Length: 266
Length: 356
Image (cartoon, rainbow over all chains, first blue to last red):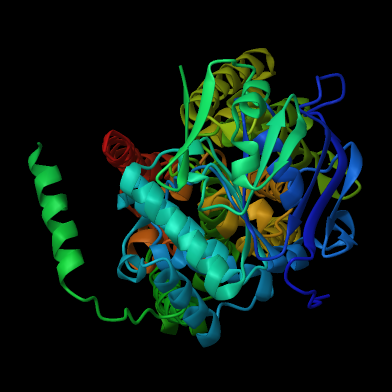
């Protein structure tokens, strides 16, 4: 099903999505729409409970919307077989803490499972892809280490490498930097930018790190009450009146200095 | 700064300084083939030893000439060794599967209360009349299967809150379920008539005493499909063991995998409990030995646990039937004696990991 649409065209689109965890429970996603263009690095922001994590899971095909539709490369996502989907879209959860001491390479190799059959193990090619994926995030030295011994930042790199081993067109990351320190947050962002610049990777990142958005990201989607209420280049979304609305907080300030936008709440 | 932190900081610096040579890692396929070869050899060896030794060692010459020796060998010893192998392999593989599914290294049929549920079901069946069959299937199999299945559902429902299965709650629920099931068995025994109570008592102690192949074949009829399902699910279980949500994003239907593994595990544990009573900790000791020997890949772990589990229980049963000279020890007591310390060691290791 791989088609080659030009850069800048819409790769992943959501229209009028609704979702509740169970019938009778309040909707966590309520009429959400967004269009993610190919080759862009986009951020999904919003207050806690605004529906960011649910929306990104809907986009990843992990949840099925109660109403509305997700289209990937023009095809309805629900019509795509799960394993085929996993070759195009890779999802990285907030934190992965394996209880079993697998090596980092073994974890990255699980990203090859959409390409192997049930009783065929990974071959030389898969091993090479996995090694390359680790190298792409500067984590080749972790290959033989047990993931239970790694720091939070290192584990996040391994999870990203696993996603890259899927050779996807699109990365969906749910708060990848939540548990990381300043240096590792910047490092992760550098990797994402490099993947965009060198491979034309499309990525959507759920984040609370408003300081890092401008100028690193191409596009920002802001959610409130389960809907996407603002979308555009960082400089357009990171403005006092928009953020005050998104976070329901009139004390939020956004100011430009040193070629970037700083955001804080008084 | 603790000494441990200093050491790990130094290690990290060392990592940063030394350019690391590309690691040559053997693919999981090759490591499975190697492991299966060694374990098959081990299983053959265990089979020979278990067949040869016993209350009366049997020589090949006697088998050719002596009618009584032949009867002993084919009617008693061979079926018993075969039964021990099937039960041991079953319990070990189910243990490995449950550990992966629940992402809990301490999970196994006994600690999750699945054996207890099966035992309660089987006791009910024996009290009502052990010989009964439903469509050619021993009623005791069906009852034990139902009991084990109910235990799985109860334990899982109790331990699962939203998207996470709480590891502590899972084991606690299992322990409590075992208590409840054990008192249920005692009550049934108390109210059952004398001969059946004796039957239940003999069965709860757990023994692989068997005469002829009839029961062995009938068991195989149930176990083989269970084994097949677990092996079929090996890849999905491997992905789930790493991370459930990631597994789903990689195309695994996690809910369906859960249901299939529950059904297969309940069937296998139910049938083995119905025949051999509660034999604990095989599903704990064996998979962890395999992990130490051959690594964490669940696709390697499941078949290897089966082979080692079979060898392990054959030998444990050999100890059970020879240690006293005359008479027999319950094989469940021997596996528990070996497994208890392993459980405690794992618990302690896990706590250390959590503290890090």
